[in-house]
Image (cartoon, rainbow, N blue to C red; front, side, top):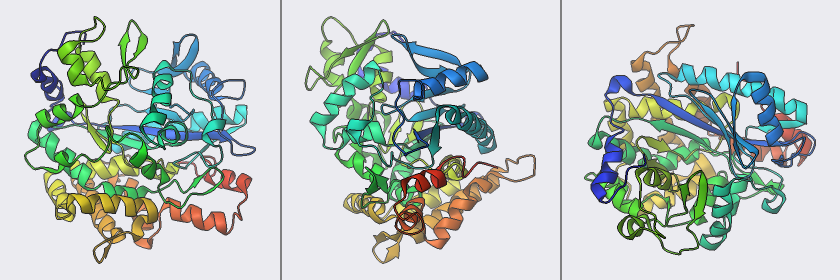
Amino acid sequence: MTELIEKKEDLIRYFESGSKPPGQWRVGSEYEKVAVSARDGRALPFSGPAGVEKILKLLAERHGYEPEDEHGRILALKTPRASITIEPGGQIELSGEQCETIHCAYREFSEHSEQLIDAGREVGAVILGLGMQPISRIGEIELLPKARYHIMYPYMARKGSLGQRMMKQTAGVQANLDYKDEADAMRKLRVSMGIVPLMYAIFANSALCDGDLNGYQSYRGHIWSDTDRERCGMPEFMFREDSSFADYADYALDVPMYFLIRGHEYIDLTKSPGLTFGRFMKDGWNGQRARLEDWANHLTTIFTEVRLKNYIEVRTADSQPPAMMLALPALLKGILYNDDCLGAAWDLVKRWTYRERLELVDQAQRVGLEGRAGRIRLGEIAHELLEIAAAGLGRAHALNNRGEDESIYLRRTMEMVREGVTPASLTIARWKGQWNYDVPRMVRETSYEAERLG
């Protein structure tokens, strides 16, 4: 992707390159996970004999991953179909293979979880099924020694009050989905963005941070509201029925750049305030001209709830307990890969104004399923959404070796929504009740070891 780009049509062709016939559609899942000391629940450092880098080394030695380093530090592991990367605060992320079924993703995530549990035990660490570091404050968390993040971290402090929290403390689960053509991509983008309040309500799981309750069910979601308004949130144009690849390109062209990568080295562009990709493409910078790979890298620095690359990435959900981690990709496959279900999901949310959408997101982040769209609880609408997704997965009829379709990955989530509870509301009740503010007990009972996948 070293070809030079000089006009917007070159950028639009990048989006068009992702178009695939339905028979080639896949689902990719990305799972970020919080690693902490088993003893006191504090964030695991990256460095040292009991750190995240040691876990990476153990995984490489025992399971055949290929280490990737930056300036002598192992920052990622690769396989032919997947990768393990580390987020700025030591959160461990599996970027899974492109799977035809959620059963495939389940097998991969199950194996990954068992490997992490075993490696973590050796260094005195556990993985938590939470969407945020529960105990350590940001000043106590080591910043990953990766050049990209050392550019972003100080810049975040200039752009909002919560961006550094986002980098060091939060963990989410994401799903990547394919599209047939431009019209299909923009429809899926619009529907995915439309159900954002419902996804926040369903998957809220970040009620603890800095050692206590934070007043939100999805504080991770709230953090994005004051991270960097130029590249986050739900841009209004995405809800237009006539929106296009050109509209998304226009939006991304106006977003300031973080960096360029040349010869495996990062060049900091945050010291050139206001250098948007549009200006860079038109005028260049310090003798450098825009390349297609620069555009691809720039798109990864846009943090909208749903974003477009040469696939669609849905980024809303908090990281989940392991038994619920597959619910987000299952939900989205069931809705987005069936035309009738796509239309039914949009019917649930299409009447909301843009202002109402923003208010509903805030409500969902604060009170989860108890938020209200007029007189209707978000929990009621969320249950309908899950029923639509389950129907879509049933129609796909992709069966595991027990003859079960992919809707099995929604069962536990559907049960919780029917009961009106979220992972966060359960955490809040337990923290004040049976855990009695006891950090070691919270760590034990939210750990992956306590709730292994079957």
